Amino acid sequence: MELAERTDARSRIVTAAARILREQGARAVTTRAVAQAAQVQAPTIYRLFGDKDGLIDAVAEHVMATWAAAKATGGPHPDPVVDLRAGWRAQIEFGLANPWLYELMTSPARAEQSPATTEGIEVLRAKVHRLAAAGLLRVDEPRAVAMIHAAGTGTVRALLGMPADRRDLGLADQMFDAVAAGILTTAPAAPANDVGAIAVTFATALPGLPGLTDAERALMGEWLTRALTTLHQGQPRAS
Image 1 (tube, rainbow, N blue to C red):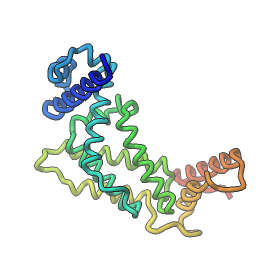
Image 2 (image 1 turned 90 degrees about the vertical axis):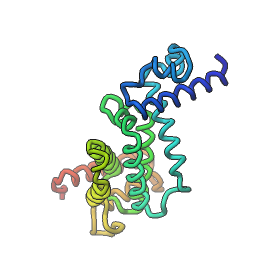
Image 3 (image 1 turned 180 degrees about the vertical axis):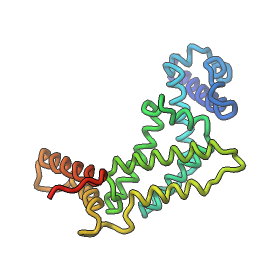
């Protein structure tokens, strides 16, 4: 199969699978049904995607890329908190608009392997890093990412579990406010104001701190991580 033919077949298969998933649900996405809709032989799907999981990953990337292109606004908002809220709302909207795909992407059996999920988390990490660099984060970056991701996934699943005509969309905003209250400061950290926020902010500047060797930076990073872990666990700091 030549490259152009291969690319065309791949596109038709992904488009067909996405349509079947959207209209009929996950169980309808069989190799036979997709091959028939895309007008290819079933072995072609295995040659191009390896297995059904590979096909689902390709569908997720395709649908997310199409969604992101349609929602593109020209770059992140200057205010990192506003930008985070916009990202949160986009995740909620995507999940509600693509329930079957979202269910597959966030299932425990597939979440760690899905390139689309991994890419989404990387976008979230970038947003969280902006908050940390601005001195607005009171927990360390990995914990903030985990809390936002868990809350967002749970919110979408809760809303999808409600009848469509009775969904309380205000729940999404209230959940964001609840998470934000736990991870954000009300203003950039100042000395003696919020030890955790100061430590998190300093950690963002550590890689570029002059006059230190890589080993010294690594050691200082270890100290900061240990201090933040102690704060998160509510243990008293060593005197």
